[in-house]
Length: 87
Image (cartoon, rainbow, N blue to C red; front, top):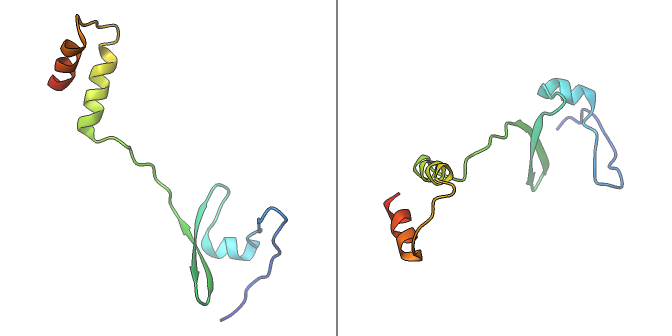
């Protein structure tokens, strides 16, 4: 294994990725990296972080419909439950 660069860790557990390594990995300000710990050491790889909705498209439709009905009143809790079941 060839060691390209050496760096020190700060008191906050931070390390600077050396410029030569950043260039090899095409890392820029704001780039995300993933760490994997192996029995031989740590592997650092560039990665993309994407967001994923916690709701399915069907659930979003229900939420949007409920939001558009703001202010709707029902004569009883049972009537409100029946309305929600129909959505």
